[in-house]
Image 1 (tube, rainbow, N blue to C red):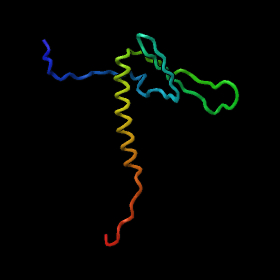
Image 2: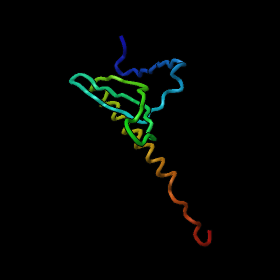
Image 3: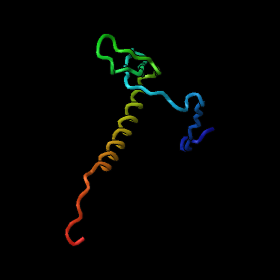
Image 4: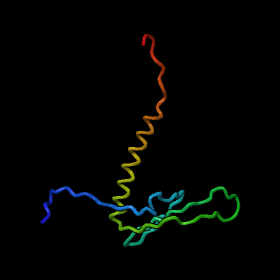
Length: 99
Protein backbone atom coordinates (compact mmCIF):
# COMPACT_ATOMS: atom_id res chain seq x y z
CA UNK A 1 0.00 0.00 0.00
CA UNK A 2 1.28 3.52 -0.80
CA UNK A 3 2.57 5.62 2.09
CA UNK A 4 0.38 8.80 2.27
CA UNK A 5 3.50 10.89 3.00
CA UNK A 6 5.46 9.42 0.07
CA UNK A 7 6.46 11.94 -2.60
CA UNK A 8 5.17 11.15 -6.08
CA UNK A 9 6.59 12.36 -9.39
CA UNK A 10 4.82 12.98 -12.67
CA UNK A 11 6.08 11.13 -15.71
CA UNK A 12 4.63 13.07 -18.63
CA UNK A 13 5.56 12.21 -22.20
CA UNK A 14 5.44 14.78 -25.00
CA UNK A 15 4.70 13.51 -28.48
CA UNK A 16 7.35 14.97 -30.85
CA UNK A 17 4.52 16.30 -33.05
CA UNK A 18 3.56 18.63 -30.16
CA UNK A 19 7.08 19.61 -29.12
CA UNK A 20 6.97 23.02 -30.86
CA UNK A 21 3.59 23.90 -29.37
CA UNK A 22 1.15 26.23 -31.10
CA UNK A 23 0.86 30.02 -31.13
CA UNK A 24 -2.36 31.67 -29.98
CA UNK A 25 -3.18 35.37 -29.60
CA UNK A 26 -6.84 34.92 -28.68
CA UNK A 27 -8.71 32.77 -26.16
CA UNK A 28 -12.39 32.26 -25.48
CA UNK A 29 -13.67 30.62 -22.29
CA UNK A 30 -17.07 28.98 -22.04
CA UNK A 31 -18.55 26.91 -19.22
CA UNK A 32 -21.42 24.71 -18.17
CA UNK A 33 -22.37 23.25 -14.79
CA UNK A 34 -19.85 20.46 -15.38
CA UNK A 35 -16.86 21.86 -17.27
CA UNK A 36 -14.92 24.80 -18.64
CA UNK A 37 -13.72 24.96 -22.23
CA UNK A 38 -10.85 27.19 -23.32
CA UNK A 39 -10.57 27.68 -27.07
CA UNK A 40 -7.25 29.08 -28.29
CA UNK A 41 -7.05 30.70 -31.71
CA UNK A 42 -4.65 32.58 -33.92
CA UNK A 43 -6.32 35.78 -35.15
CA UNK A 44 -5.18 38.09 -37.96
CA UNK A 45 -5.58 41.53 -36.34
CA UNK A 46 -4.25 43.35 -39.43
CA UNK A 47 -7.61 43.09 -41.25
CA UNK A 48 -9.27 46.51 -41.15
CA UNK A 49 -12.70 45.79 -42.68
CA UNK A 50 -15.23 42.99 -42.36
CA UNK A 51 -14.79 39.78 -40.49
CA UNK A 52 -11.53 39.10 -38.69
CA UNK A 53 -10.09 35.79 -39.89
CA UNK A 54 -8.81 33.29 -37.37
CA UNK A 55 -8.15 29.61 -36.87
CA UNK A 56 -8.62 27.50 -33.74
CA UNK A 57 -5.28 25.98 -32.75
CA UNK A 58 -6.41 24.11 -29.63
CA UNK A 59 -9.41 23.50 -27.41
CA UNK A 60 -9.13 22.25 -23.83
CA UNK A 61 -12.03 20.98 -21.70
CA UNK A 62 -11.56 20.76 -17.93
CA UNK A 63 -13.41 20.30 -14.67
CA UNK A 64 -14.17 23.33 -12.49
CA UNK A 65 -11.68 22.03 -9.91
CA UNK A 66 -8.88 21.85 -12.49
CA UNK A 67 -9.85 25.31 -13.80
CA UNK A 68 -9.33 26.74 -10.27
CA UNK A 69 -5.94 24.99 -10.02
CA UNK A 70 -4.96 26.31 -13.46
CA UNK A 71 -5.94 29.86 -12.48
CA UNK A 72 -3.85 29.61 -9.30
CA UNK A 73 -0.85 28.30 -11.23
CA UNK A 74 -1.22 31.06 -13.84
CA UNK A 75 -1.49 33.76 -11.14
CA UNK A 76 1.65 32.40 -9.47
CA UNK A 77 3.59 32.28 -12.75
CA UNK A 78 2.40 35.78 -13.72
CA UNK A 79 3.53 37.15 -10.37
CA UNK A 80 6.98 35.56 -10.72
CA UNK A 81 7.34 36.77 -14.33
CA UNK A 82 6.24 40.34 -13.57
CA UNK A 83 8.61 40.50 -10.58
CA UNK A 84 11.56 39.38 -12.73
CA UNK A 85 10.57 41.83 -15.49
CA UNK A 86 10.31 44.64 -12.96
CA UNK A 87 13.78 43.88 -11.65
CA UNK A 88 15.19 43.57 -15.16
CA UNK A 89 13.67 46.91 -16.19
CA UNK A 90 14.83 48.95 -13.21
CA UNK A 91 16.57 52.12 -14.36
CA UNK A 92 20.32 52.09 -14.03
CA UNK A 93 21.53 54.36 -11.26
CA UNK A 94 24.62 56.44 -11.98
CA UNK A 95 27.59 55.83 -9.65
CA UNK A 96 27.74 58.20 -6.67
CA UNK A 97 30.66 60.55 -6.21
CA UNK A 98 33.66 58.84 -4.70
CA UNK A 99 32.79 55.35 -6.00
